[in-house]
Length: 506
Ligand SMILES: NC(=O)c1ncn([C@@H]2O[C@H](COP(=O)(O)O)[C@@H](O)[C@H]2O)c1NC=O
Image: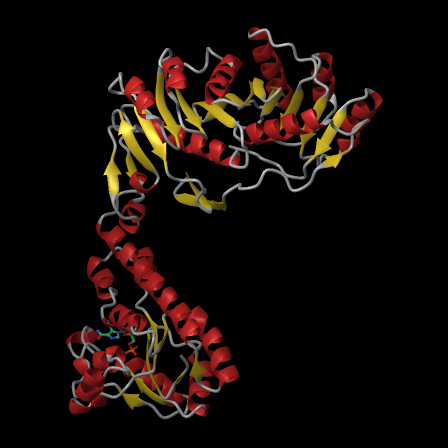
């Protein structure tokens, strides 16, 4: 729905930017209403402007605390243009339609930063401005709202290009921004009144759930989120902070295997994968994943992409674990697993990861796109092309390396994680750890494959791995010394795949 702008109400704290915007409005024949200071500024530009007092029949009172807060102003903003009753009432009370609202709020945050005088800060809590912004944004089907100076240019371009007309999509986009502006403004005010560190976060996100404690018993903790939409909890105690962190890692892992027709079982400890296997049956996948590192699995978080059956439930029942996540459980399996009342059983209902990931650092929050894909290239640069079996294991290992803390190395043989090194400060150490792990459980590394979450800076890793029996490698590449590792692979009849996709996890 297109709307021709015929009238505008402008009330801005900082006047700069109006010198180009207001002439554009005037050129388009738009009637301009304005509050005191803004009105003087516009008059100085030589452009006709009607004082808002002419609409309200009141002067600005109480030191400016009340100037636009009046039914004629809010009626002109909120009245529905396509509602007969609204239109009739607007006529009855002489309320003019306002088609455009431009507001720049009192600079609350700037004032807090520049003074500690409470009365000065309180005066900079804008009341009329946010009210007009909210009202205009609510009625975006009829009018346009500009709630930030950095949007003047955008408005000017639209009005110029469309001869004073705005589309519903454009008005909705301005309204979206307007609600964000007032939300941010109110969060800043709430934070000022309760200056606990990170209080902004608490007021900005709804429904904080207190947890028993954080990573350790002496740390208080909250969870902001809605688990009910992700899981159906079938058994067990309330999820702890550490449980949630590991459940997150487990779900991220299993979602990466969503294209696998085989049963995949993963075992997570402290966010790292310590066992994972793909097999034709769920019981086989479980037993093979566990065999990869039976020692670390104790107290872990387990995840599977298939229904848990009774046979698997009986096998799992033999070990101590914290959480088991699966898309479904057979009735018999559930009865077996519920034998321990604290054991957490989650029926998974989330099969796509959220698009963004958040992490707190210092006094801020980092936001990044979720690492949703596994590799963007598959370049065979070794002595020979990988066989079908190697391709299968290489891509399996590549996914696992993505779910280990950097520096990470995953060694896989026949769809089973047989050795992993993670969280190491050097890649060689991660590799040594992975080989040691494999030896600890007597895996023969001949014909195994290796994935590295980031490039090999030197050819030392490939040499050590080759000596241990590993014959195929997958890594992103991108080191200035890539050729050293590639040359070694070529000279020693090894397979090497470059993915051009790094998977750091810090
Ligand atoms: N109280 C009111 O009715 C009211 N209406 C608009 N304002 C604010 O007054 C400022 C503009 O005032 P002036 O045009 O007088 O400089 C804007 O920042 C606007 O957000 C108000 N001020 C505070 O709430």
